[in-house]
Length: 162
Image (cartoon, rainbow, N blue to C red; front, side, top):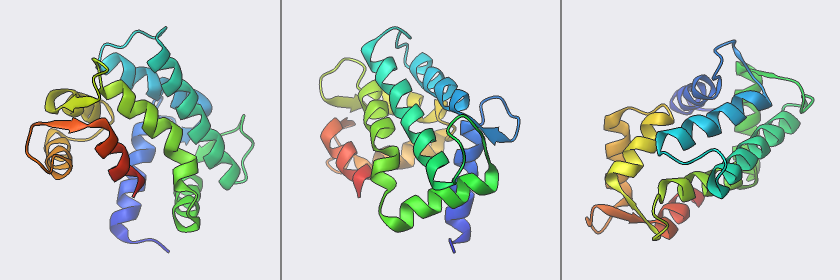
């Protein structure tokens, strides 16, 4: 069983991944999600970063489908998604499920490839991911422990992996 707060977070994720709003998640929703994020930071669809994100997002869908015992060409409803995400989290497999998409998302946020992410780029990406400006600001502030106003990609990756 999961807490109400965690369930609410998973429901929010479901809603943001359901790009066509049909109440189900498919591999196409995850591919479209990758495009939305890439577009938000101005990353060309043909770039290596955008391709890595599409691959990572597709991987996440396939792993969740496997956990939900749904055909990878099929679709997940809200409850199947929540159960699959919960199963991944409680079994310790969450890193395997979301790791490639998280790594690709972080790389996408590092728009100039310098190993740092600005507050602005962080906020842009988080807003495109369905979070409010306040949520993005709070997350950035929590990660920016030295108060420099820029996040080291490695530090963000480490925080997400915890």
